Image (cartoon, rainbow, N blue to C red):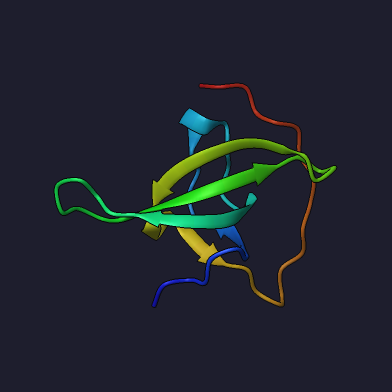
Amino acid sequence: MKLALYQRVALATDEPEFRLKKGDVAMLVDYVPHPSGGEDGCVLEIFNALGESIAVVTVRESHVEPLQADEILSVRHIAKAV
């Protein structure tokens, strides 16, 4: 089941190429089909703690999960690129 657009989601995996970590929260803004029939992608908008947009990235659909009522948000500094 696809998640609804324009909802907050969490990363299910680290995404070091974007300096993002598992559990980071993003806004799901679009779905994109894989060009050769592989796993579809999710376009995510990333915000800082002040609500300012800092990046738009595309990750695999399986790397995104819905937020859960028993989770709590936290703050971290943006990691340096690996």
